[in-house]
Length: 351
Image (cartoon, rainbow, N blue to C red):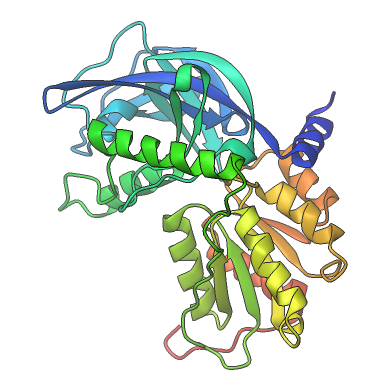
């Protein structure tokens, strides 16, 4: 099966594959072992611990650079980024080399185990009072939790620290401690049980900043990362768009259904911008379901994702998306959105 056919099938089934890996952290005298995952679409390869050339950097977690077939790859000590107190790398560790957007990076892990094929419906957003590097989690064998990490947020924090040399630590949120992780896991278990028992999930919620342009198009922005959601929303509102948000495809569909069944609302929605990787329902499945909805066959859809593989982009277009823009490229996103919906953002003084 070709990459495109496989991605199309996964989108139809609301499935995805991830590489499972393990990590041991030492935090405040505690040893914390856990299993984690990263979407295989983001992974170029897994290599044995290479010779890493250290950098003269005080950035927490920045291990150095190694060369992979003539290409320099920055290496992040993932345990250190998640609060590990120990130092140094071990020869038996592995490096997961990732690529998303236009960035490549290596992440040091203790071991990689297997590739899992998982339904997005079984992947839940973290239940916590504050944002962490955990973007989602799912229950696997032996009632153990697998945590999916926000690698983009980790790199963004490193970039922020590098551009603000007065800071010697990441400005982002860190991993919760063991007690907090257990509380999140307990809450997730209760949430999953309520779902399987037929109890309703919390109602969908959209948020809206004021009206930067009274007649500006209304856009539904869908992303599970609070960091990306906030930054993208700011960029869109500054360009004159009005924005409502959802944190996964299921929530987005509930919002769209409300617009479809409320007189006068349907015509107000100008476009949907969606991430691909999201709990409960991913963006490719969302795109497919929007196109199957009688009220939204022509609603403009832009996929806004860090997944840069051609198969993922081709799948999005084949399922009905009107465009595909790499994440965090707000300028191109605004230009693509404006062209697709036929609306030109107003000129801003001082812009």
